[in-house]
Length: 425
Ligand SMILES: [Zn+2]
Image (cartoon, rainbow, N blue to C red; front, side, top):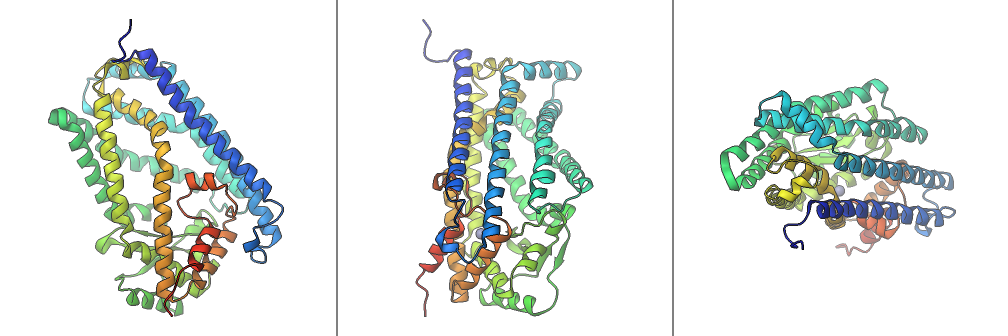
């Protein structure tokens, strides 16, 4: 008779297989639901938008949504197949023996092993990413990236990972050697410190590696936006314009950094697409995120999440069955990190609706702030409508699908919330 605990390695394999398949089926089902819903609404745009998005644009947005859905189904299944192959074929322990046989065992070598495996595992995704950019986005008129730029972006990403990711990985593995059973606490603190540092440094050092940033030029728009910043007591040195049009015709605005390093960035494509009052509304929305402290709040919650992750990893790294189920020798900490990295997505996936619900809550708050500051919701509604039109957004996602995946409420939801606000006269 087998005792229930510790579990047999084969039982662990079956449980992991079930978790991976459950996530896969859920993804396929969500895609299917969304597709049926979009098809059901394909012939007539939602009543609220008749006369706003013309029929040809609406039809194009439906085609775009369906094409993205098809590609996402292929991607999902492809990645599941690869994951199962990598986990259960014995290729990982084989690669580890090959690697460990060449070098002395140290944190530097373990980190290099993890790094090489992560890099290798990212390669099979490249063709699909390429197809997405140069076939799908191209077909709908969004792509402005050249082949050269696309490959250069990947190369820069790789070099950044080597320069920042590899030393960080070595540090974490060293901390395990140095700090004993509370290592997970120290590793978490090191990662958190790194994240905080990046929050400050990324806008200054990393984003400029990929895009050019220029202060918004003198003129009526700049005056209008700076006066809004003053009215809302949002101290800012400048508002930056990013050359987003270098890669894509999609438009956006974002807000990064904190303290003296904060930065509001408008895509050049956004400035091209929106009228001045609408751009003011978008900036008011971004200032709303700042005023409602959304960045620090999100940071605290994600830090707690990663603490839970490190704790779980430290528990699993103690268990023999965790290693044996995938053909590794117990106590091999590099293997524990690798397996945890490959498997955690099958669990965290189920938390994504909660995280997205919270994010949507922040969007409503920022919208309400913008409407209040501008004394009317109209400019923001106008901006959102144009953004949805220009980006060919799906106006009719299935509610379960958008509830699961959407970080922003849909156009209809945002308009309803904005119109329902009781604004002071
Ligand atoms: Zn927002």
